[in-house]
Length: 74
Image (cartoon, rainbow, N blue to C red):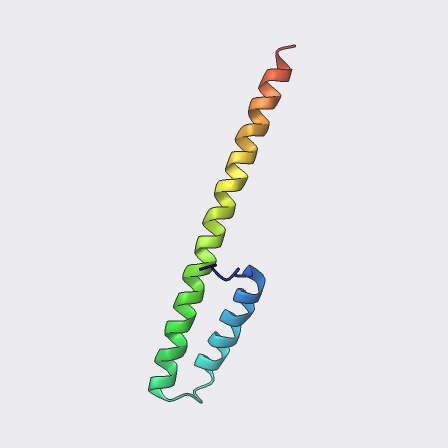
């Protein structure tokens, strides 16, 4: 089973929409709870994307510094 690719920018837009809906006072309590749960799920997915991206960047920086150190000795 393949996992659906989550787009960070689209997720942030969706979170903004949810926040606006929650602030509008047009939702019932049940609808508000459902929107909040959806927002928390999206937020968790965004955090996962950011954490994975941070790891990739750290690896790239570490690799770059190693390459620089090797070339610096010449």
